[in-house]
Every structure is written in C-alpha cells, then in structure tokens.
Amino acid sequence: MKWFRKWRHNRPRKDRSVRFYTRENCPLCVDALAILRKYASDYQLKIEIIDVTKDPQLEAQYGHEIPVVFVDDKKRFFGHVDSVLLLRLLNRPPECE
Image 1 (cartoon, rainbow, N blue to C red):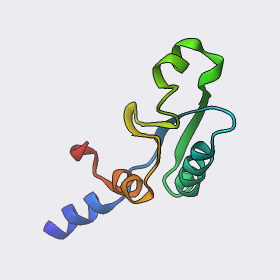
Image 2: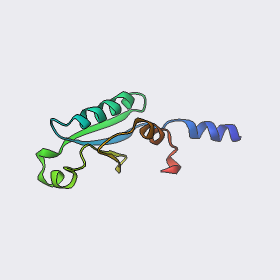
Image 3: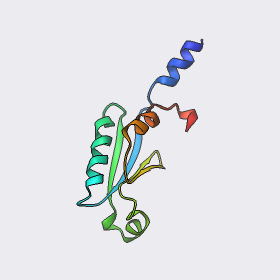
C-alpha cells in the first residue's frame, strides 16, 4: 500500500490556474512567460496574461515587481521565474500547499 501512496503523491496536479502580470518592453517578462509556456501543456496550465499598465491600481501594486506570477491564487514568483522551483511547485501534492 505504501507504493500506491508514493505513486499517487508523485503525480503532477492538473488544471492549474496561472495569473501572469506583465507589461510591454519587459525582457524579464518575456523570459518568465517562455518558462511558463514550456510547461503549460504538460501541466495543463491556464495562463491569464494581465498587462498592469492598463489598470492604475495594478500598476501601483505590482509595477516594481514585474513579472509577477500567481499559481492557484497564491503569489509564487516576482521579478524572475525559477524553472526548478516552478517544477517543484507543479509536482507537489495538493496536501503540501
């Protein structure tokens, strides 16, 4: 029975929602979005891209942290997306979050 629990916990979670706050002419945003898109199909990521320059409130809140990435409504990355940490997060069992 232990093998089943281990197998079940090692499966990636599916249907993850990702909010990606960005702006035009942002090289870090381009890199971060490329990392997210790299794993989007394998992990069924639903990426919502939000331009903070279109909303003054969002620009005030996130303007100095761009890019900002929320995964399942939790702020996970800002300024840079680390692909190793992203994979750990996406492979983590739901009970650990």
